[in-house]
Amino acid sequence: VENGNKIPVAEGIFTINEKGVSLIGTRCISCGNHYFPQAISCKNPRCNEKRVEKVLLSKRGKLYSYTIQYYLPPPPFRMESKGPYAIGLIELPEGIRVMGMLTGLDFEEIKIGMEMELTLERLYVDEKGNEVVTYKFRPSR
Ligand SMILES: [Zn+2]
Image (cartoon, rainbow, N blue to C red; front, top):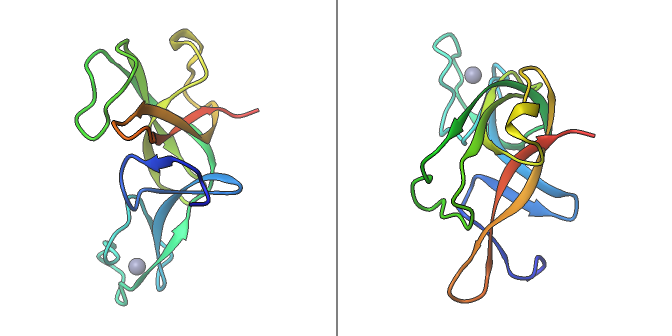
C-alpha cells in the first residue's frame, strides 16, 4: 500500500495522494454545478442533461461560517481528543460549501472570511494499528 497504514475514516469522501489530500466531488457535465459529497446526478432543476463526473475539488477556500462543538461526533468519527472542537463551512471557488473540522488555530483566532486550506489529520489508531485519518481545514499560509 502506497500510503502505509493511513486509512480514510470513510470511503468516497477524500483521496490521499503524493500531493496530500483532496476532496472528491462531482461536476455536472452539462451545467457545471459541483457537488460534495458526490452526487449521483445533477440536482439543478434547470439542467436537462444531469450527467455528472467525478472531480477533485479545490484545496483552498474561505471560511463562510463555523460553530464550536462540545459533544463528540457520531460514528465513524471517533476521536482521541475529548475537548471541544470547531466545525466550519468552507466556501470553495467551485461555488459550493463544504463542512469540515477546523485545526491549527485557537477558537478566538477564527474569523469569518479567512483563507483555509485542506489538510489531513489522524482521528485515532484502530485495533490493528492503522492510523485512521480525516480531512480538516487549517488557516492557509
Ligand atoms: Zn447540471
